[in-house]
View 1 (cartoon, rainbow, N blue to C red):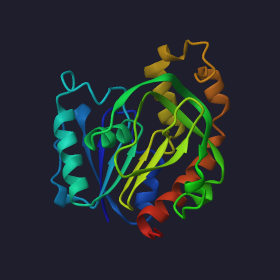
View 2 (view 1 turned 135 degrees about the horizontal axis):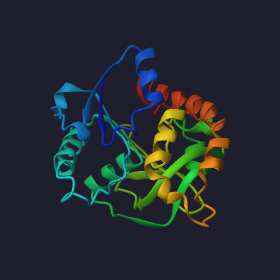
View 3 (view 1 turned 90 degrees about the vertical axis):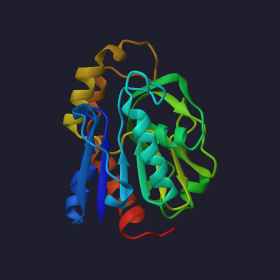
Length: 234
């Protein structure tokens, strides 16, 4: 299976997803917008990965490539490609499908729980998560659910943490793909955001102490990818 990754900043890579792709003998190509690399045609991939980034879906003037990226996502949706959007990626999908993307009342930064809806717990794609899971967050924006989307997860300050559209499109607001290196680089580049008294913004020290959650998150992500991509159960 041919995967193509849309990567917006160099330190928000596909992380542990890369290992899963290689272990399952799939191929992976990239468009790295920070290197001004070219976008593929939809015929060049079966699965589209859309990663995170510090920019907003509305920053088209500052980042003109967002327009071309959204056009590619729209084509991929129309051709019923498999699409996985993480953080900014989930927001781009929502925006392309006409949903509103806007600032959330609270930023979420750090390892904190998400809760899975009753629909998710009864759905074979998400059933292995149970009622809740502690995952890594770094976002300040959120979105309304796109038309046809089913909400699968939420958190205390963010109502839409994961959604599914048919059996092709999966949007995840949190970061299941992170590695130690990705987190360290996110802290290095976004550390100024960690200066708040909000209970939903953790310090760099707190984040460092919670890295043990990553192994659980990787295992849950791999089960999700197995079911979403290798052995569809929907």
